[in-house]
Image (cartoon, rainbow, N blue to C red; front, side, top):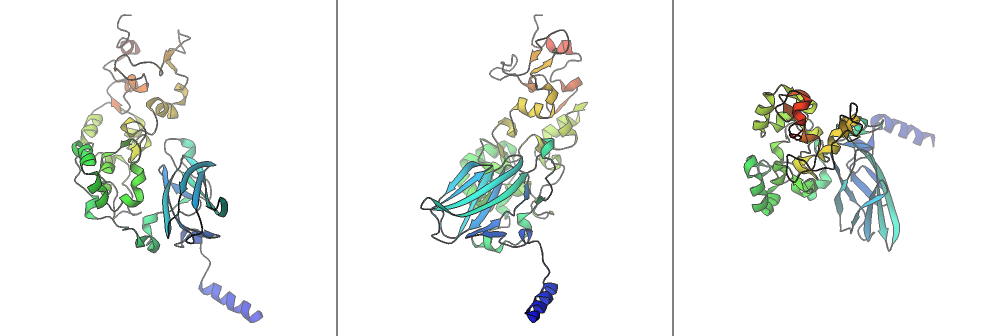
Length: 347
């Protein structure tokens, strides 16, 4: 026994203990589940996490996936690997993977994912023990059996914002077939409003294959965004006042660079997005409520008098990017009373 102990001690000196969760190609196994990606306590930037796992063939009828106790997926397993996307919200997401056979659980696996968000201050910094893990920085040999993990020339299509929509609809099958990114990342384009480069799967128009970490995007965001949005760049640069996110070049605070449920690729509706940072305006009585009117002025749930078919919102009076006028007013006015007359011209 003493000799065995000496051998083990010597082996430990040669092969020191490392952190397996961020180095091993198969991060963890629980019963028959092998979770290849992501590691536990990982930090993600956007609203989806890609999960890759495997389990013994024929060991399950269905894989159930829950996030914070809400069912988000039911997957009929095939042979080999299972790869799927799970939607995540800002903050800690507790993901539970249950493998069932004949209605009974045979394996369970859980992991925690923190979605970071610049939009909400309480989610800007991850909790202790969470950290980022960059999938494309490793070889991931097991994934290469099915996937090409390096971008090709076809993943950088000609960038022409005016033709994005036409290309996306006319060439959808061809675009997806020629994209090496599509098979793993197709869910990022599943929301109703899709960013032009994503719609045509021109991923390396924005993501840099030579960057560190690999396929990251230059910061600040505006360095990349203004490559296409030149008109906006010139327009806003000529204005006296700019909104905070524009000033610091962080377009992705408000806009999803991939796809979103709201127009202009906004993460939330206009009003909800604005009061997320300007919480003191959230009463809906932003103007006049602290002066001669106890009712205040509505900021939502009314038709916009100057934009037919649109609802009143913060953007009815304020430009969300830049303006030559105080308080980012969207009209050529210098005082609040001039602003009021734009709608209340009969007063």
